[in-house]
Each structure stands twice: as C-alpha cells, then as structure tokens.
Length: 424
Image 1 (tube, rainbow, N blue to C red):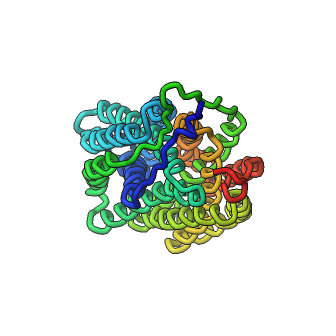
Image 2 (cartoon, helix red, strand yellow):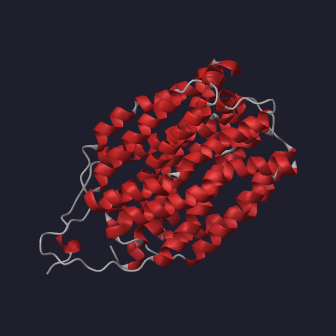
Image 3 (tube, rainbow, N blue to C red):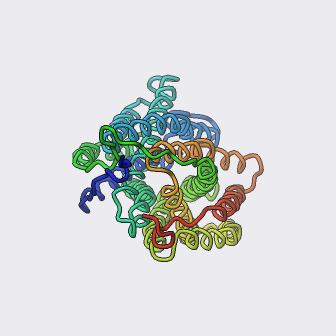
C-alpha cells in the first residue's frame, strides 16, 4: 500500500496565485488592525467618557474582544481545511471577515443609539476574531505545502510580511485621513471610511482565492495513511514563540496610540509610527524568509532576538527623554526589524515541524491561543500599567519580558530547513 505522501501529485501555483494568498491575508489583518490604529477615535464614538483614558481603555478592551473567538475560528476553519481543503477554508474566512468589518463601520455612535452601539461593536469584533482565527492556519499550511522545499522559508514568510504590510497600509490610511480631515471629522466618520475601504476590496480577493490549487493531501481508496507523529512538544514551543511575537507585535502596534495618549503627539504624527512598523516589518519578514532558506532557521531566530533583548529598554528610555516624531519612527523601525526577523524564522520552523495531516488545525490553534491570551490583552494591559504606575516605560518592560520568553523558546527549537536536515 502506498502512503498519502506518495499518492500526492505535484502542485504548483503562479506568482499571481501566491500573491492572492498574501493579499487576502493582508486584507484580513488590515480590517482587524484598523481598529487599533483608530482606537482613540473609536473610543470617542462608542465609549464617550469625561476621562479620555477611560474611553481609550474601553476601546482597547473591545479591540481585545476580537481575540476571544480566534481559537474557536482556528479550530472550526482549521478542521475544515484539514478535511475539505485549504482553498475553501480560506474563501470562507475571508468572506466572514469582510462582512463583519463592513458591519462594524456602519454601527451608529453611542450618541445615536446609546448602549446598543458598544454592544454591537463587541459582536462585530467577536465575528472578526472568529474569521481571522480561521485564516492563519489554512493560509500558512497552503504556503508551506505549495512551496518548493528549497524556498519554503521565503513562501511561509509571506504570512508575516502580509501582516506587516497590512499595518503599513493601515498606518498610511491613518496619516492620509488625518492630513485632510479635522480631528472631529476623523472621530466621527474618518475611521469608518478606513474600514469601508478594506471591505470594498474583499470581492477582488474572493475572485483570486477561488482560482487557487488545492494542496491538501488526499488518499486514494484503499490507501493506508502513515500514523501522525506526536507533536506536543512542538505545540508548546510554538505557543511560547508565537506568544512572544504577538506581544511584541501589539506593543509596537500600540505605539501610534501611545504617542497620542502619553507623548502628546498629534494623530498625524502618531500614525507615522504604524507606517514605520509596517515598512520595517514587511522588509524584515521577507528578508527573514530568504535568509532562513540560505543559512537555516535557527541563526535567523536566535541572533536578532538576542539583540532585541539588549536594545528594547535603551530605545524606550531615549524616546521617553526625547519624545520627537522622528525618534519615534526610528525606534519603531529598529524594534520591528530585529523582532520580525526572529519571529518569522520561528514561525517557519514550527510550520514545518507540524505534520501535514494536522498542520492547518495545529498551527492555527496554537497561533490563535497564543494571540488570544496575550496579544488580545497586550494593548489594554500596557495602557492600564501606564495609567496606574504613571510610567511611560510600562510598554518597554512588557516587551522586554516577551523578548526574553521568545529567546528561551527559540533556543529549544530544532533546525527544520530542508537543505540542512535532508528532509523535503
């Protein structure tokens, strides 16, 4: 009897099809992250309060609600992808997130419908989280399975590159809208326009995704499947590395809000931090994928993360002493670059380590669990810590701890690059 691996027919995808996966992933993360970029303005719309910080905390708590359903989405869409295919799962998650984002943009403010406004906003965020939780596993599994072994790192790195590109676009949208609109208009309908813009591109992404080849291995009748190896230890390391990466990511995403609420910068100046993080993250993720294919996964994980541990606190200290926009952008760029090099390499390693038959579910579930438990609370926690301690360095300490945890977990991850292990 042949195994399902032997029965698998070669599959290839065009550059346009690979680009459609990255584009779809970027659109989903754009719709999810735009809430964070406009947290101050959304707080004013749905959670008006005499203390602006209380309004912001309520908005960030609602942002965090989107993480609660991500593990459920990872389980539902991941199981579907492992049984029925990667393509239909990616189409389904993409559709749900587009509709929920449009719904969020159309919810009237608190002044119009009272408590129903924040309630509906929370429901929309829960649905967004469900859909986004179902995106990461199938799309990452697709990229890992469609890639030639010698280029797998470059392909899988598109997962992180597209996420950072989404943040870049969200930041540019914020800068552009703040340049042409008053702060009042930005709070009333500017953030809504940003959400609608993302939702309007969803039909294009759906058309592109429906043309993708299927990469799920299917066994012919009578085929004996090889037993699925144990992967519990990989799941533990995946949880630790992804938890570290997501805390770092959302601390850096929070810089735009931090710059407005703590450093007293204008929205136009503050949104530039998101642009810097997005540019740096996109470049760093692509470079990480290329480097991992050439020198292996472990060196690209370990050295940049070790450097991050050393520079986090000095950079935040300098920013606190000199709260200048240019320094904010430089800090955002450097911190995102070193951490995304390491985080992308670690994500590639755990993607390869999970068995094909459970890859979509296992990868999506570990990712979503890590993100929902720590990523979803990060921005609220650092804002709360800043308020109760009175220290603008609260985000720095939180990020420093995440870097240490990530480095420790990466030390235990084995090399998975095919050219260094001999396994395709």
